[in-house]
Image (cartoon, rainbow, N blue to C red; front, side, top):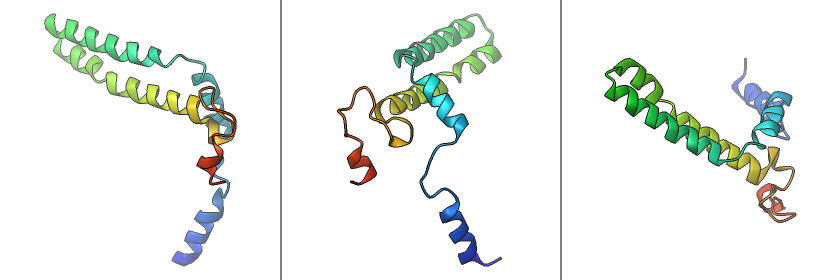
Length: 106
């Protein structure tokens, strides 16, 4: 297989850079969640982890203590979907109409 042919196929695979139906459905539902939910989940898991550590349940404390970073990343993703919208096609609730035009390069 020719490398240039492979690159051409990759470039033409999704030329509009559209999200698939699964990602779009997930974004639709997660955009409805308040952003501070993820912050409280992260803080709660830190508190639970500290409590488990004090109770000498080290394995459980370590397990729960690894949850804050994913919660915060999910919160960041949630905020990006709300602000930018899925695929940058719609204006988010916190952006003026047409604000995504600069993102798309118009």
